[in-house]
Image (cartoon, rainbow, N blue to C red; front, top):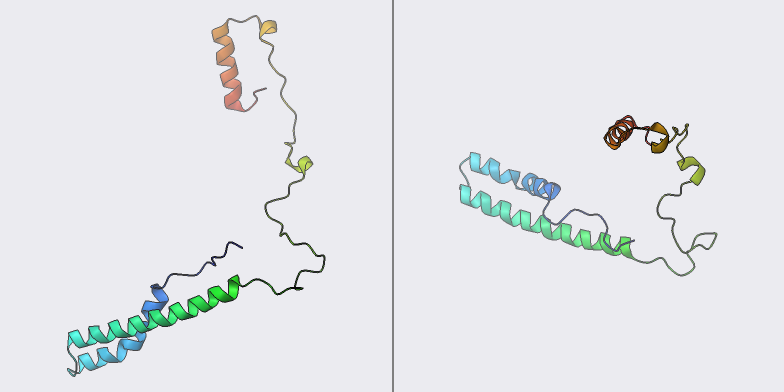
Length: 130
């Protein structure tokens, strides 16, 4: 493990939505004329800072929990310390199945060099190059 779990940052969508939900009663008071817009924004800002701090503490706890090493003796049953990484491919499965086209012998064709180049380019386009 690289030591950094994949967690969202401190200021993210869910944190802002939670703070908006918690500050929504202030909007009701604004609609009733009991608060000004500035007071509503200040309440939202204070609630947002509180939610960010709460998420930061929770996030730090999650990071500490996820990156903590296993206790001694908690290895797997076969005693392997290294995890399998990468892809294991059988060499026979990676071979291309099919017939290979016959290779061109430039001396046997008795063609000028310009025609041989054009012929080899056409064979490459078709995918039948040697």
